[in-house]
Image (cartoon, rainbow, N blue to C red; front, side, top):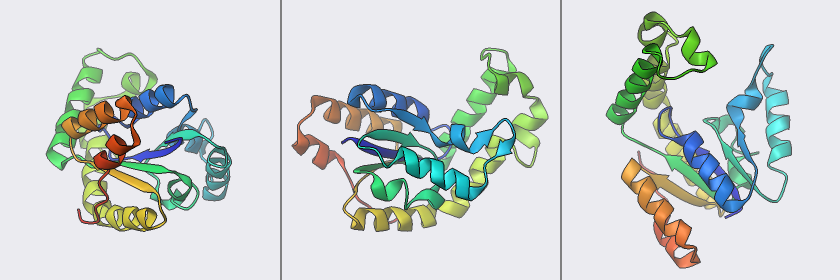
Length: 190
């Protein structure tokens, strides 16, 4: 495992998991959001694809982000694709908890400082509403694309709960290839 693509809805621990893998594997970590969203606004798709392709043309990397439209330049170049496929009620709970922490001033970052009750929960583009909408709209498409990626020889790991993530991490930290292959589950259904 040297080229890892990791994706999933918000509040599934993508960044935390990707950073840990990056350290364990001694490979660079890239969050695709950091490439796409610039001070001047989002990059055009062609430039976004070019930059992502440049990152994944190297021998080792850990890339996180929910951009299945980059499957050919990220997922298909990975040796391992990790899908954090948590249930919607857990995602809603975690987003709500995070937003409440931010609104209470327990997190000090640029996003938290701009947050209001309306933008946190009620705005059309709130993270909560977007997560629910995208979960419903994209899940079946993700399953199809993940299956296609697996058919290309990429090891697919679909983790459906924090407990599965923890167990998979414990098995992979031990190192033997046999435990990694037992931990991987290639599934096609939602």
